[in-house]
Amino acid sequence: MTEDKLLKVTLLGVKQSVKGNKFIFMGETEECPSCRLQGACLKLEKNRVYEVASVRDTIHSCAVFEEGVRTVEIFEPMYIISTGAKLAVESAIFTFTPRECDLMDCPHFNHHCLPPYLKEGEKFKIIQVFDTQVECQQGYKLKLVEAERTNNNNI
Image (cartoon, rainbow, N blue to C red; front, side):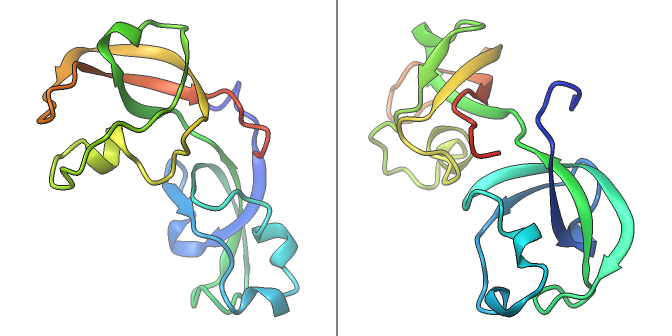
């Protein structure tokens, strides 16, 4: 649902400009400083996930995207994050604190426990708690939650 989300306008590669598509903004490239459209593209927070809410028809030329870029409306989506089972309560606010873990082959490592697009110290509000407990190879008692970032002043 995007009705309660703050929408931001930016430019995105034609192939990526699909409603519902999620992407991580990786920052500017070496071609960006000389582009006349850079102000529309570079307003996003680096290493943050965004979701496309709507796509406009006009295609603009771009030195980075061979097929060009389209104007899109985007928002920051909900995140699926692991948290301590005792902290997993709907409407609770928690601070993201990565756990000590070096099991990079664990299916939860990059997706739920230590996602590279979340920063230590960010605050989240739990929207939904999922019933299943995370099978943690380190022995942590974890639950998956759907959460929204509460300190989202940059979007």
